[in-house]
Length: 116
Image 1 (cartoon, rainbow, N blue to C red):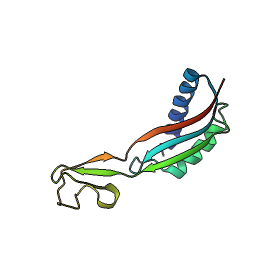
Image 2: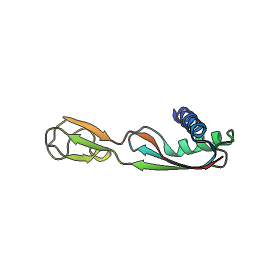
Image 3: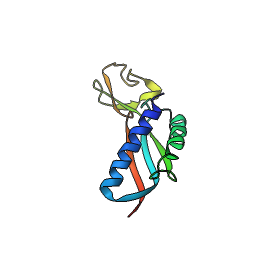
Image 4: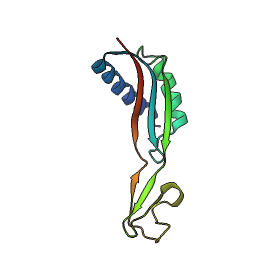
């Protein structure tokens, strides 16, 4: 249940960006969330809706969460595979010499805003 903390950090980042860019209102935020980030997107959206009502900058904003699939790399056979489906063991060669290539990120992809 760390979603509210992430929402607070996101809001702080957006507020700082707004000050730097002379933005007075943010209408849309697209957030890219990795499939294995540990973020519960439904709960995250609920936290966003709760928090945005307390911020002039964000009060009318819409949050769009885009989920990015997790992909793992196998050092043994040099192939990638879907992490969630197969876990840490490579489905091609059976090796455990694998590492997460991507899919655990939480990144602001896009902001739509009104400038002063």
